[in-house]
Amino acid sequence: MSGLLYLALLGGVLALAWKVNVEARTAANEAAHDACERDGLQLLDGTVAFKSWRVDRDRRGRVALRRTYVFDYSDDGTSRRQGFVILRGREVEIVGLGPTLVHAKSA
Image 1 (cartoon, helix red, strand yellow):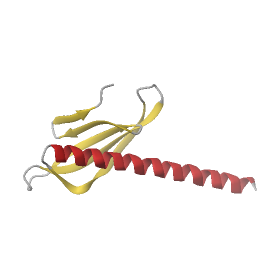
Image 2 (spheres, one colour; image 1 turned 90 degrees about the vertical axis):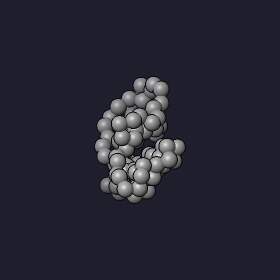
Image 3 (cartoon, helix red, strand yellow; image 1 turned 135 degrees about the vertical axis):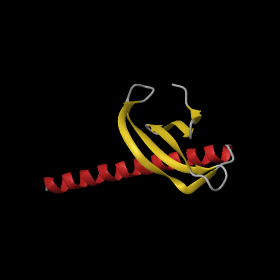
Image 4 (cartoon, rainbow, N blue to C red; image 1 turned 60 degrees about the horizontal axis):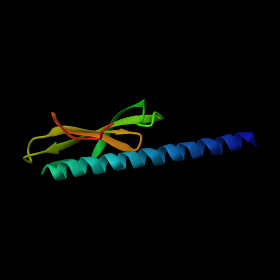
């Protein structure tokens, strides 16, 4: 019986991790879309791609994941440049377009 309980608990943890990751990717997509729209750029492929994560601390000092997503955009319809979105926990921390920083939350 305890094996079944552990399996159910593992399933719950995995479902929660999946949900949190989907929410983070959605936030990164929205941030990339907003940054491109604000600067009159075209978001290519329509989505961000997960690049990396690491353990960090949020503004309150709590342990949080710092996720990095990348995306491609174009300013003229033919060139392809890469931008990035960094989330710390559930908050968008930085959105960058090429060499220019577009949005950064104050610490």
